[in-house]
Image (cartoon, rainbow, N blue to C red):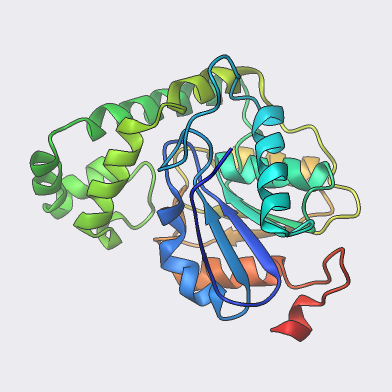
Length: 271
């Protein structure tokens, strides 16, 4: 299937995967910083952003999405690219590494390390966020223009919601309410847990210290399950850290992808 993506820069390929209900523009705050040293490919996952949904009857499982991503990599001619993701995209990045599809994985607050109670809580917050996104756009942007209300509306997702501009708020709301994959993905995620080991693949996990959606307990769980992974606390960042601290996130992603790819191309030397 044809996925919508944005590509810029030069160097070793780095594919960026967003979270549930989001879009590839979530990576805009870090794109230019990354593109100075990487061939950056930010993609809308199936049924999110501007990408079409999966064919009717096709479940939104990890296996189904990874099959689509493998086909996407092949179409672009990138073999085992570096893959980075946030939330749901972080889970996909780890799964891609575990299955030999990625040369490295950098996961920012990845899904897949929750227990049943934590998953129910996160799903409730996400559904409430989507409900709020259905407000008429003029009302939404007017409310988001009030600092106290903006903090209340977006504080569960962002560590520094005051940094959000109104154009981003409106665009993200449109993407959230229009995503046909939102509910099917939430339902499919009930039984999803990351069980892989990512052997022989460099893995970096970053977690926001202000992540109120997937909290620090899950961060500790991820460290225990992947003890060989490099772990980085993202100070002051929330669940979606790219807008909270672009410079820090870009640094983590460049370091996480700064090694030799399967084809023998050395990222640091190229940069």
